[in-house]
Amino acid sequence: MTGMWAIIRKEWKSYFVTPAAYVVLALFAVIAGFFFYSMLAMFVMQSLGGGGMFGRGGVDAQTMLLQPFFFDVAILLLFLLPMVTMRSYAEEARNGTLELLKTVPVRRLEVVLGKFLAAFGLLILLLVIAGLYVALVAHYGKLGFKPVSAGFLGLALLGAAFLALGLFISSLTRSQIVAAVGTFSLFLLLWVADWVTSYGSGHVAQLFSYLSITSHFRNFAQGVLDTKDLVYYLSLIVGGLFLTARRMELAE
Amino acid sequence: MLEVEHLTRRYGPITAVDDISFQTRSGEILGFLGPNGAGKTTTMRMITGYLPPTAGEVRIEGMGLRRDPLAAKRKIGYLPELPPLYPELTVRDYLRFVARLRQVPPRERNNAVERAMGRCALSDVTGRVIGRLSKGYRQRVGIAQAILHNPRLLIFDEPTAGLDPRQILETRELIRSLAGDHTVILSTHILSEAANTCQRVIIINRGKLVAVDSPENLTRRVKQTDTLLIELRGAGTAAQALIAHLSGVSKAELIGEQEGIAKLRVESKDLATREAISRVLVQGGYGLLELKEVELTLEEIFLSLTGSSLPAAASA
Image: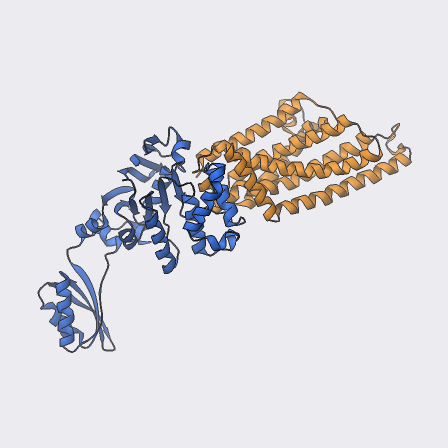
């Protein structure tokens, strides 16, 4: 466990002595803030206009404000998290520090978990920023506790799954660019996988729909917790971490 | 201390390390000598647990690396060819991080870090960011990292590569001072380095162990005569004849002459012969500019020990 804590501390130090973490945090705060403000402005206009535009009865902060905001944050994570994970292993391989990590009396899994938890900590920081925006609205209006917490749980799981997969891809290469592009492409594929259902059906379409990270996120964004979705994200996380640990044992 | 038995590593059809076995004696400095690509780094990587061997066994104080990797790794300090440094961390932060990874107990951590920094003369740069340090300092941080937890076995892969002459001397001195308390294995492709620093030398060629012996014995096994290089002002051919007639000189050849300065290569038996050569030259009125012994190169020792032509990798 000392080994894992050492890795977590070192990763955080590295995040914050280089501009990397600040850039990610600042970009996230600005872009998520813009999304949120736009969402809110539209929502206010809809409310004043009686919500006639969509032909619905009333306006509901859950469907019109929170749900799209959660999706926007998820997309933002899709863009930003590859930048967090790309250096994790690729840089160690290039610096030669992998040789240190593999020859100290620390289990591979501790190293992988340490790196994952450090990145997860940064993700939580991002979600806290997003939470501030939501809290602002909750302060002036009414937002249910359950849909809000379900949405954030969904974001944390989705982000964690991205991080675990990103770690694995970073462990496959020495180049940060390759790691970033590979990770981003994989995320994008997982994101659009359920498009298949709009033009196809049958087993293949079902499989793609199951693999899609979007279809599992929809329930969370709507404030619904489903074991199926939990299992999906947890298996991505565990799978990604396991593969990374295996890769560490075999790789040079 | 360290026992290596039948260690082998294959990469597909290529055998990088082929059935190497040896043992270290407690407190000695053991040199790994071989040309680039001979398998030195691969062997060290297998001893430190970085690379799993294809076959064979590594034991550190009786502890099998394969059976209990964590316990075995605790006894090793390792400086890879490229020092494993994080350029964004300060020297002290980096060493604290490594101390945690090496399971130094929390109470002793600060002491261990300060001691390692003191020993490696890093006290001036403790708060500096590693990425801004010179290569010599970085190498010392690498060594500090390896000795931090006071391990029984230290493994240094080419510790002096790329350093300037003064840094090379300092590094050698540091390594020599570590022996005794620690058993040290270091790799090098420079014979004189092995001769200066190590009590015993293992010669590796093409993944195979060629010889294990003290540097003196190895040199003795190979050379019967000293090769001298002489530079003098005067007629080359006449000087050559003069030297060739001395007893104890088995061969004298003129290898170059321009602008009145001649260069000769002479095979001489012993020191007395060398004195005789300088005496006859001075008495003969030649301006003796230089008389030096040509050190045996690793390549020559190799040729002699392996009795074969050099592998392609060695000439590179």
